[in-house]
Image (cartoon, rainbow, N blue to C red; front, side, top):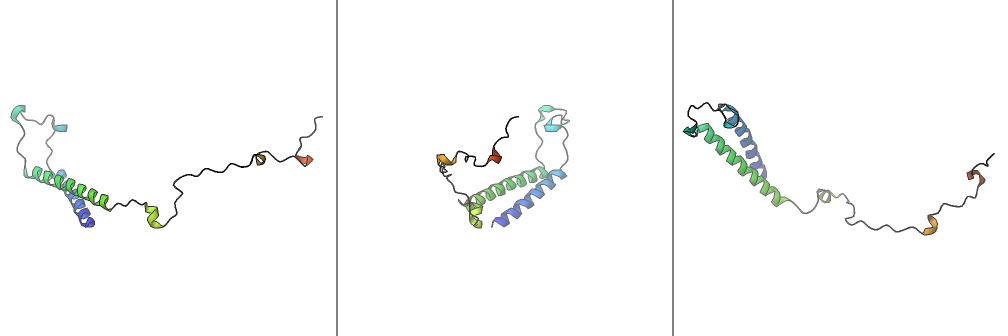
Length: 120
């Protein structure tokens, strides 16, 4: 079911891109300077292409929400690594044991080769 909705979603996206690219430019960025002599004339009625664009956009958003809901329902509480069988690190870090105090000191020098040379 999710694959069907995904294919419909992709077809809607491509159709929406195509419809937007085919439409005639109305000039002026962000609707500024449209070229109307009477600025208080209001918006012109929607054309068939504009209605088709709105319909495709609404359908695209609907399939987006549907895919999101489907993915949320199928999500598991476990990790992907748990499903693969890969061992994970322990969740709570353990406190390392402190070494004995006598092992922290360097060993006594038993050999003269390690001693510094005598001063001349």
